[in-house]
Image 1 (cartoon, rainbow, N blue to C red):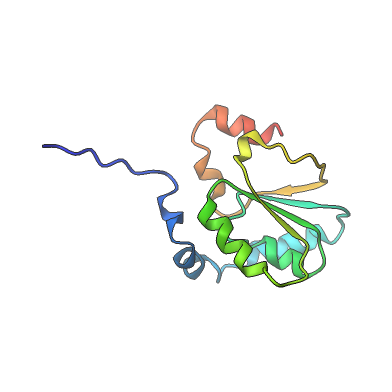
Image 2 (cartoon, rainbow, N blue to C red):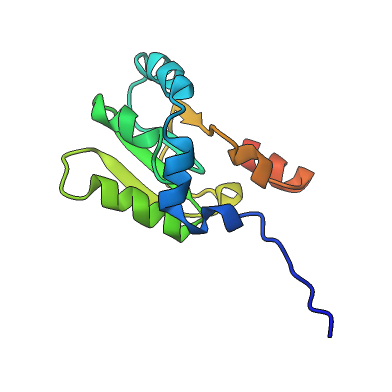
Length: 130
């Protein structure tokens, strides 16, 4: 009997705690985002936000944030980090290629390895043509 093992492109995100251990030390992109965000008014949107590695630091310096991700486990961990805080973060489980938030933003970003999960030209076009 031959079982076909299918690797899902999001398997590495099934353990949000391990994801944070492997990724939270990298902060150079967050430093750059803070500079750009300093001149931004209104809501800032983090697409494929994961556990909030960039979303939460921007909220900590006073920005109104929306974090969007397709992976419920990652969003659950992000929500846990901001529970019982005064941070202005809305966590939304949604496919970024079908984004429908009902708000406009002058600053929308996606960092890290997020883009690698948009595997087709159609998915990439849908991501960029919000």
